[in-house]
Amino acid sequence: MNSLAILQYNYPANPCKQQIIHPSVISKTKRLIDILGALVGLAIAFIVAIPILILMQKDSPGPLFYTQVRCGYLGQTFRIIKFRSMVVDADQLKHLVKNEAQGNMFKNEHDPGITNIGRFLRRSSSDELPQFWNVLKGEMSLVGTRPPTVNEVELYQTHHWRRLEVKPGITGEWQVNGRSHVKDFEKVVRMDLKYQQKLSIRYDLQLIWKTIWVVFDKSGAC
Image (tube, rainbow, N blue to C red):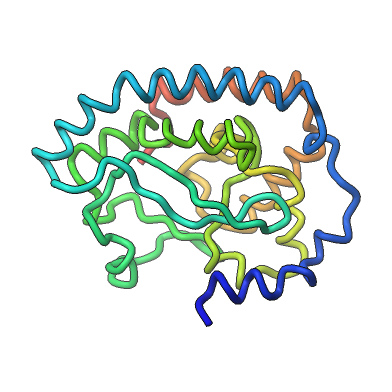
């Protein structure tokens, strides 16, 4: 049985299934902002897709998009989509790359599998533009928590599940106030829970504005 099947099999026992539904999950205003933001984001993604594809084929031939199974609200799996920033089949080479993060997350700012165009995409956060499709579908939100991989969630302790009580986001507390500088998973969890406590439409808009500033400033990008 593969890891995805194992996670789905264990899903009914997930600790966060017993929690009260977080208000953000059923907020119509938050969902409306997500839809409007997703439409704008997808329009930008459509405009830059052709130039990115041309540069990508010169640098590292292969598909324009990269997809990966991630875990969202209450551990439900979905397939995230990004502009490809790494060589083809980079996931199969992951075990050869040193993990610079601590805990249940993977991070390496100097991963040799990242292509030249990929480094630009990551520094400008352009690789994340296709995720607006996940937002439009309701699998993600503009603002939320970092969507973990299946392998990461399989190692979760009980308190880690709390970060999945809201939808994952393209941006969030970690992306704005931690970004690549915070590599300790427990600190990421604390930041995610802090976001859940402070969550409001006003705070979401503040984080979106800060995200735009961080992206143009390129602070913490890798």
